[in-house]
Image (cartoon, rainbow, N blue to C red; front, side, top):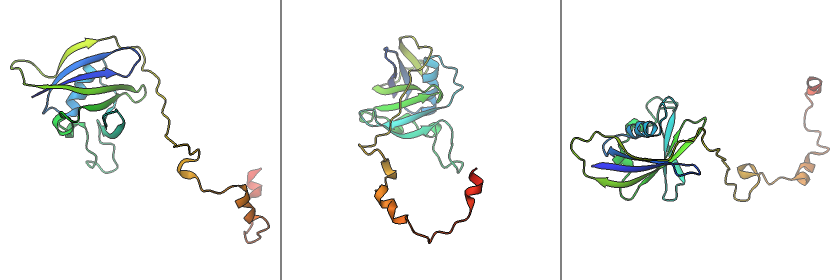
Length: 179
């Protein structure tokens, strides 16, 4: 079977490519097809991210094994497209070049029979010109109205009063080091 993807650059203008690729090809093959379709040189690192139906990023699938134990982390070459994507799971996020953060929304649009004699992967359609620079991303943590996040210890100035006049702490004489 052939997977047909619409790969959309996360930008203000409509810039996308339609790519056909075999279902048994790997995420690394899709990575190669995407950077070729958009005119990148392929010299930068990239990752895919699984996501839910509303494009909320989940697990990273890197191009290279960056784990502490070699072989422990699965990479793009370990995943066939059909392992992750099907009629129910159609979306995945692709980030190319972590300095510029070119971000793409990749959606499986169709699954069709393979046509004999057609070389895959194939760029079926191109729309829009790539900008010179990626749009600037702002990453904000979701703090749920908690300005201290997970580091809140519920202590305030009144709690620190308990240390006043407590002579049980030994003075190690480090003041001379702070001049």
